Image (cartoon, rainbow, N blue to C red; front, top):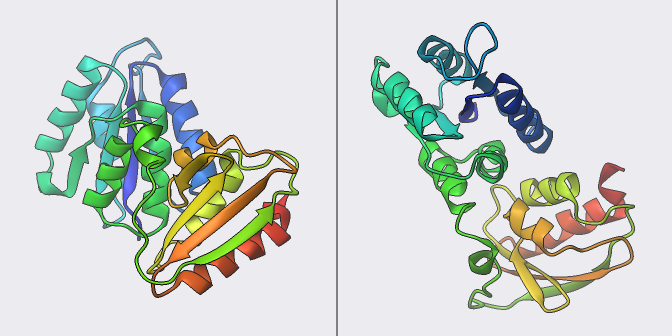
Length: 225
């Protein structure tokens, strides 16, 4: 089972919206919103967050994300009150970007620490994601034309990133002068690649061929659109 997520917000609707977006990116991940007070007023509620923690934990642990300061305190208190506080962690991350990055990482089967790092890393910025990495071994390079209507927007980017889960491959995607890690949804979206644009895949590692083929299959299928 994958790591679960809890979205702690002062607003019930904000928490629900972020959870809805994250699930679109990672449909197999349990994402539970915990927003607002029981009467729907703005605030955070310990019991609601505790219940969300229990609901989100399918056996692989939980990562919590929050919007504002007191939401962090409520989230941390709920974690400290668990029978096993090490089963959950509060991530200091941007709420929306962090939730998306964490959800995709969890969908790929990563453990709690890796999911939390992905959330926190989403706040580092695209500059880091777009730094080329040193190539190791022989690279497989493939140029592709995006034919789906909206290019590498959120859902196709999530599909592409998820398709590489579990592979021993470093895959970079180039669009013009920009480059992103293919495992990063936010990095791929940051490329701004649209229909008709040509992107270049550069893959290295043991599973480089499989990785490139998976991406080619997605492009051939127009990312299911």
